[in-house]
Structure formats: C-alpha cells, structure tokens
Amino acid sequence: MHFLSSEFPQSSPEDALFHIIPMPMEQTVSYGGGTALGPEAILDASYQLEAYDGTSYPGEHGIHTMEAIDCSGDDESCFLNLEAVCHSAYEAGKIPVTLGGEHSLSIAPVRALHATRQDFGVVQIDAHADLRDTYEGSPNSHACVMRRIHELGIPIFQIGVRNLCKEEIDYRAANNIAYLDARELSLHGIPSDLLPADFPKNVYLTFDVDGLDASLMPATGTPEPGGLTWWQALDTCEAATKGRHVLGLDVVELAPRPELHSCSYTTAKLTYALMGIAARCL
Ligand SMILES: [Mn+2]
Image (cartoon, rainbow, N blue to C red; front, side, top):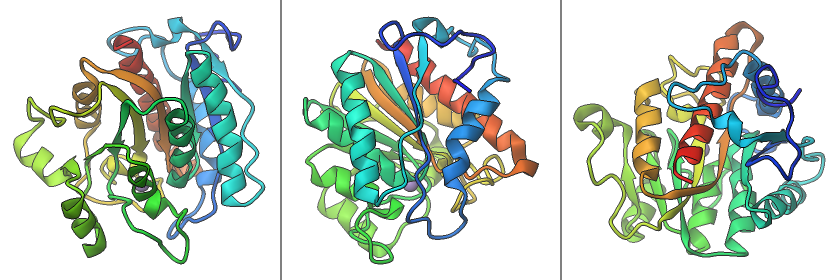
C-alpha cells in the first residue's frame, strides 16, 4: 500500500517531491514493543485521509512510497540501508519522509544530509530528550539519538519534552541546547521567538509521536502524560519552520494496536500535516 493511495496515484520517484520511506526498525525498545509494525499501520491508515490537509493539498507535489527498508540486520546495517535511500532522495532534491520504526533511526537521514551540507538544524518533537550517552548498554538506543545527532555538531531544538534524567539535564545545560518543554508550552503558549535567532534556516524535523499527549497517543512504547495537543503539535511545527526550509522529516515510535486504530490514523494524519508544513515553506 502506498501513502494516501485513495487520493493520489503513486508518482514516479522523479515526479514526486515526497519520498515516503517505511523503516520497520525495532531493536532497542525499552518498554512497550511493536514499532516494527508502525510503517505499515501508517500506510494503511493514510487511505482514510483527505487530499486537503486543512490548509493546502500537499499531495499535489507528488508522493512516491518506496519499498520498506531492510531492517533484518544489526542496528548499524539498518542505518546504512536507510542512509543510502535518503542520500539519493536529497541528491534528487526530494524530501524524504521516513516512517518508523523506533526513534534511533533518525540518525540515518540526518547523517545522509550532513554528508552533503552542514547548514541545517534538527527540530525534535518528543516527550523525552533522547540525550543519554548510552542506554541499556547501547549508544544506538532510541534514548540516545539526539545525543548522537548533537555530537555531529548539528544544532538541535527540542519541543514537548517532559521526562528527562539528570544526565540529560546536565548535557542540555553544558551544551546550551535550546528547547520549549511541554510544561512551558502548556502554561505560556508558543513564544514569538520560538527558535534561537541563530538557528539555521534549513531544518530536519523529527517527530516522536510520544510528544503528543498519552491520551491522544497511547499506542507508543513510552507514553507520557502532559503532552502536546493536536493543535499545539501542528502549531509549534509550523512556527518552528516559518521562514525556513524543511529538508526532510520522520515520524517515529508508533506501536500500533488493533483496538486503537485512532492512533494509526492520527499518525498518518500527522505525517500528512507535516508534509503540508514542508510544502508550504519550500
Ligand atoms: Mn524519542
């Protein structure tokens, strides 16, 4: 099944702005499992979407859904497989949209981008900072992915965080990492100067669905209360990318459950909304 096949025929890779890349990676899940089934659930649910995202028709830019990435090997081989596909998409001027899969995978599209350009930052929506050096023995854990990205020298901005450990608090402070945590967002809304003034004009967007409130998104490995509402999520992403360009994005950590099909649908709709945001700031 390709993304939003009910509304748009599969475009050729050449004609499509959006390259949808299913990445059913699940290796370092620490709590609830099931992210390997995420991409297929998102693609299935996307059939229910409308072409109009509430603001525009992102699919008119063309959507090409790729074959799922081979995730049968170890974590580094999974990353390399995804990196190669993302590299081709960037080279062709396309926007890779990776469907996870666990959050660790984000290192691959970011590394692929970093290999050809350094003028970008990563905006992360997440309940967790993901800034640990290692977690449960692995440096490639989902709990370490933003640390790995930051270590490449890439500026990051975190939105919606509400569960972090002392190591992460200290790392944030020591490295002057900018963020808008969920509590602050809930109390005071989105500030007009959301991103630091010197944040790069090009952005890679990584959206961990546990950034959404657990009442809206219970079907994820590590659900957290106190998260973003639907509109807070879309409005912060829109604000973070205003006047910027989105070079690539991923939506990760859906662990679909048959009795919670609203979560699969919500993730599909979120993905399409982020594609809309990307298309509107081309
Ligand atoms: Mn995460």
